[in-house]
Length: 130
Length: 350
Image (cartoon, rainbow over the protein chains, first blue to last red):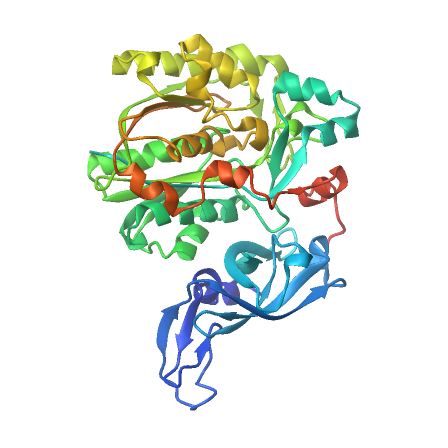
């Protein structure tokens, strides 16, 4: 994330999981200009339920300063129940419970701080629920 | 009928045992466990703060209220650990939950009673007819200086309550507030940790206000302690609320269900009200509940609730408080990890 203006513009998808559903069926969580399949610009706005499964994941051991306190932590590519593919940090989950195919639910967490005087970035993370 | 239409709590999965803190500072673990009656406390994860805790609790309250979030006309979060000095916690919450933008939002502070204060104002809005629904929340990631007695109790968690007129699960029968200027506990701006008056926080502060509010509430309602199935009081440690309750005439068995401090610690603005959620999780239609909060500085808010038959429809719609406190996913921290998570040590600026 970045400055306070960009952060504010991204609130609908980062806070509420507001996504785009294109006529081809393609679902995108982050905002896209057009459907990567059909090229069309029309879409329906949907709110993701906040559940899905892990497609793949990795464990991060060396990271940038903002995330130092969290290492080691996992980052996963998740397919939501609506079909959107989302990259998310994993929280409140033991590494032994991380599996491809594991069910996850999204939770609202602090992602990072812009230093001691900058804005605090909030958004979604995922935790394994089974 | 006006009262609670939805309630929800949240506590993090991280814990530190009283014995771990005692061993760090050379205190006797047994005297903490028996004297203060504290076994362990909740600790916020490194990605949790008052805002994320308030949102998790409010989501659970919405699950039980089963209402369109857009119908909520006011949201108040009481806390003494709002993440920003200037920028509201409530604005993050309403945008995360799809409430507003046509909503009145404010952050409250009053030491440990800011949560019941938020409830009091939310309830008053509905009672006055200003709006159909209003939400009051108390949440904290409370601070205690390393080596201070507060470090054994200062914990993290919170609860949210939606007030309304339809499908009420617990009717508000009476309220009362009792407030004086008492310098028992304070934190100045830019200070990391609060300071307190030691033993002065007891009789002239906690007990004076809890008993003053509790006695007035009993008198106002014309009820007796034996009329209640449950009673819950602010829980700065295990001993104080049990002593205050007994002085008011309540028996141990009326206080057991809401007395969660031994496994949760003191969640400050979320203390007595999270005890209230533990009671609502198991209460039966017709039960009466007596609650008195306490915030240093100092004051107490008292509520008398009567549970309705609607409670049975909502109890299982969101995680129960004692289930969260006793989750098998609990993660116990050592003291080093605990001070890092609580940012009690200074890191290099980046």
